[in-house]
Image (cartoon, rainbow, N blue to C red):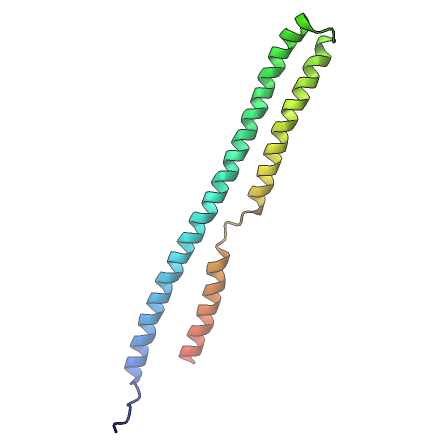
Length: 130
């Protein structure tokens, strides 16, 4: 029966350096993945803001058209009919914009999962070196 030899200090440091390099590459890949995912969510929220802006713009156009059309067709005062249409359309646009802005505020640009695993990695390295 042969006895198992303990690794030398040089082998231990070589293994530690190799494992540390692997760990750093994995953390970089995780950070890239998290940033890409967050950017996708932010992109969707920005699209909602744009959609809300377009609806608000349509409200402005409807406001202008309403002033002309309502004057000819309805018995309401011109300003009252135009105001009613404008408030409804602009209100819908405001709801979309405010909802999307709220979602944007919730999105964290910081890769939380990567930070947690880096803390774990630091602890692991301390244990390995200690």
